[in-house]
Length: 177
Image: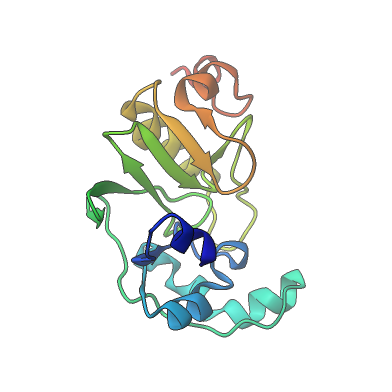
């Protein structure tokens, strides 16, 4: 919070891409402390938020209580942060309710665990679906343009163009019809 204050910024919302504990474990406490709403993911991930106590136990995280988002997101919605407009794309696969946020003006996407530099999200969790993940990347992310840079949920940034050329899971030559 000090870093935000140093830059004259104030937390407006907490945006969630999906319901896995490594992405939402502190969301409720932070929302309460800062008196802000939790927005997202898509309602299809509600079961992940409801099962946070089990997730924390299964994955060795400190105990985490269940919570519900203040607002679930739908494909095609827009979230406004100050003057910044983020488009919401429902991208199931890693989880059923995974969403990504896209700033068209900046050509920048926050993709959570859908896509990584050189890899893709895992699909061995309950509710995950490999083909849905590939379809989300191919039919939701790629049409946004090769010039789009993305921030993944883990690891370094990349661009959609770079991944279309070199990602061993979703490179264009691998997905040719």
